[in-house]
Length: 145
Image (cartoon, rainbow, N blue to C red):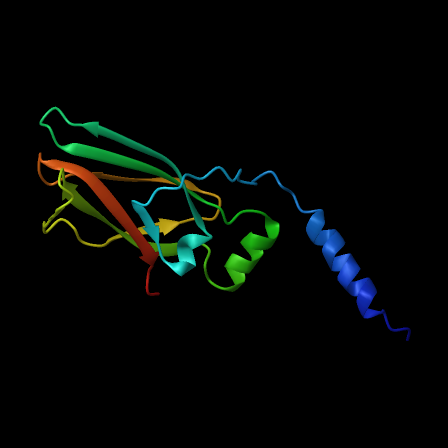
């Protein structure tokens, strides 16, 4: 039996990976914002796309973050399935600040759960606990499985 050279196997693997369907490719146009904090696991998986803020009729600050999961494509889907990260769970929490940058302590500032599917765009929303809130910060981390 004739052995296939290692070079030929590597070239074939690169060729087939390069021929994957790119319909689900996410365009990398993320925002840089210091209010969006992730851990090392999520740093290369989640991309902040948009931040929308508004005041409710009662005067509370309302925030909506548009976040994209950048784990798309055939190989990423396969790898996420093998490693058990498809879908994967995260924790997130909002921290609120007044106009002077002082954190406003609230019992509502607790970690929330979310399940994320590769390639998905999802929204994180929250409403400030007090009318004097002027800014926010959202922290995201990998959930303990």
